[in-house]
Image (tube, rainbow, N blue to C red; front, side, top):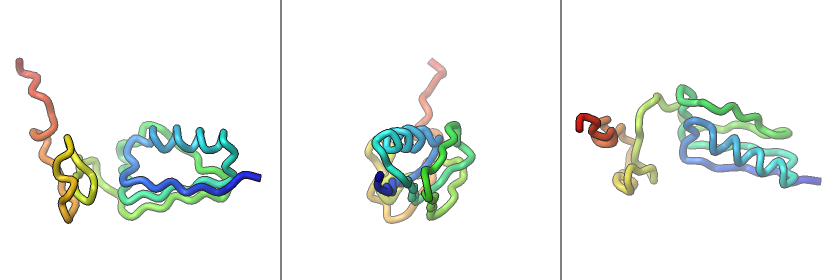
Length: 99
């Protein structure tokens, strides 16, 4: 008999990581797989994932399609230690393509 597994994520964005992980855990015999995420960005979802068995999807907050930092989430190893969640301005992470 398989075991139940709970995957904890900081943010579920495209769903690719969660989808691959669920498939891997299911192959290993998990009978139930739940996902717990601090932030969920359904607007960016490109991969559908199906929970296993009696698995549930727990989310703290739905997040708009912004690049967020703080509370352990970073950009280039910066902003991780912010005691709040902030939106990073696009000019901070978009490459200059004018050259």
